[in-house]
Each structure stands twice: as structure tokens, then as C-alpha cells.
Length: 329
Image 1 (cartoon, helix red, strand yellow):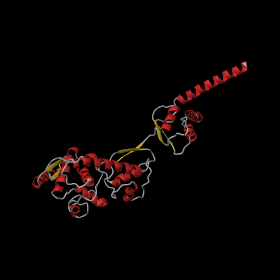
Image 2 (image 1 turned 90 degrees about the vertical axis):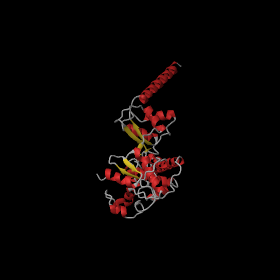
Image 3 (image 1 turned 180 degrees about the vertical axis):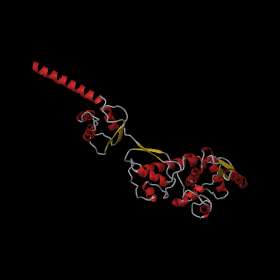
């Protein structure tokens, strides 16, 4: 009887010491190879695979205690795939919590105001964290893939910074940007000024893309929008260089010539009245809001002063004087 008691005490002490040792190991800071330290949990990975991966990298002191802890906590089957980044000292216990909660690091990509869809696609294609599912697809095929009703992709994606998990599909990112533009555009259209010469939100988007390319300074944006809207009301030609440049495509060599302004094509607003058939770039929200809530003015012309600002005129005579003053000097 006395021997059994001693054996029981020894077992209790051993369990206590073992538990304390395991707790110490699991709460002690891990030895990270570098800071920040990045690692990935691949889809379908088992706890054993991840534990061995981290142990082999020298992050965990051993794999078995990590596996034991996860089973005691009941999270052995709760691993979340993704990319993880450790930026400060951590313990195996905290590490386990992160990979079972899915506290993953995110990649980011930024679409810039004024970019064309071609520039957007190039940025997506070059991003190393993106899964390139749209490679080889036409613009129309991409629009169909993301569930868009439009066939022309230009201007329909909202310029912003998008965060995503490594390995996300480029189609998913495009779909987010498309819906973001739809939401912003529809909200702005709902709050638009009255008596605008625009039939629908898409026409507003087209004009906003022109304003985006024409604006050199934020303070001029609403005035420039007003000029183009006033011209539309009077059935005047918009006569804006960025649309001509867009229509020239790869033929544009950086120098817009008089012959380019005279050569008729569907984006030449010097030879055709009204709006071009599609946007010419991605407009930002300020340009959309400027078009739908423009400055109240009778200006019909503007010319760059050469310092980022524009001079606005109500008559052709005044405009010609401004051109002589700011452009021909």
C-alpha cells in the first residue's frame, strides 16, 4: 500500500513537472530566423506537416509539443491556410492561436486614378502575389467572367488600394473593383444636381474620365466639369485632347499633331459631337462628384496657365486672349 502511494505521488509529481515544462516551452519566445518572418500554410496541410515545417525552420523547439498542445486545445483540425507574417517575438502558443484563427498577412495592390484598363491589367499581371486567371482572356471575356453587364471594360473599375490574401485570383480583385465603382457611381448619381445633360450613370462615368485626364489641380475639377457640361447643353463639340490621344492608342508618340485633331475617329471630340463611346480612363470619386455636382458657371473654355491651374472663359474672344497670354508667350 505504501509503495502504491509512493508511486502515485511520483506520477503526480512527474505529470506536474511535465506539464510545467510543456507550459514553459509553449510560452517561451520562439527563435525566429529573421524579423519579419514569413511562412505559408498551404491549403489541405495537416497540423503535423505545419508543425514539422516550423520545427525544421528552427521556429519551434520541436514539433510534438506543438501537436500535443493543439490536440489538448481541440484545434488540431482548425488550421487556416494563408500567408503569415511575424513581426515581433512570439511564443508557440500565440503562433498556434494565429494559424487557427486565420490571422494572415495580406498583400495589396493599388489602381491609380487616370489609368487605362490596359495599365490596370499590366499591374495585375506583374503582381507576384496574384493568381493570374485572366491571362490570355480578352477584355470582353474578363467582363463576362466577373459577371459584368458591360462588354467594354474601360473606366469601370474603381481606383483604390485593394488588400487580398496571397494567391487570390485577379478576377476576384477585378470583381471587387468593378462593384466598388458601381456603388460609388450609383450613390453619386442619386445625389446629382438637377438639369444635367446626362442620360444615365454611364454617361456620367464617361465625362468623369475626361475630367480626370484634364484636371491639373483639384480646385479646378468642378469648373472643368462645368465647362464640358455647358458645351453638351449647347451641342458644342467637347474638343478635348485626352479623348483624341486615347483613340490613337499605340499610334500616339507623345506629340499630338494638328493632323490628329482633324482625322476623324470615334474618340475624336474635335470632329464628333457629344461624348465618346466609352470612358477613356478610371476616374476617381472627386471627378465623378464634380461631374454630377459641378460648379455653377457659364464658362465654355479653359486653358492651362502652365502652373497646374486653368484659366476659364465665357467667350471665344476671351479664351483666345488667354491662349495668347498663357500658351503663346
